[in-house]
Length: 166
Image 1: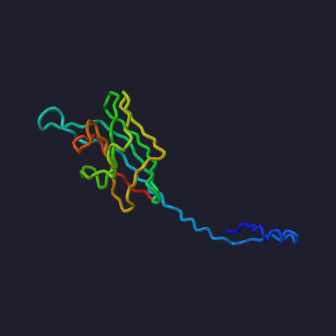
Image 2: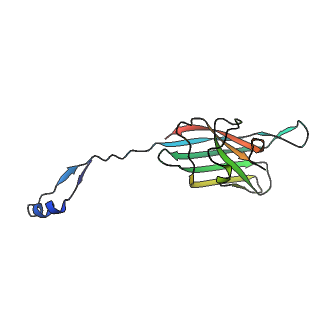
């Protein structure tokens, strides 16, 4: 890359001669690789009222998390549809491993912005920048969505995320 660089002391003397000083410069800007994790939500069976009875919510949706290796910030886009027909706030978390692994989230569940569900069962998040650090060596990551608690027994949906380096 070449650019014109002016040196005040030198320019004064050379300006009379009509000379422009050109300096070759190498910019050492390291382009940081974006890491994009994305995947679809699937329902998780939950225990219902009777002993041994298990039921499943109707759940579908998508999540995309874009992070940079250079900082602990991420852009999150999340959409989820459920068979829930009441307004409520659902919790969610980003965890290492695959769905059902019971792994500890990368940060406490309380630090994730809640998903506000509408009476039609739809919830969305579009967070341009949130604090979230996913270690660069994490190739297997999943997202849990919780209802009525933050333990594995409260997970109503999960998404195994695929890593797409952009």
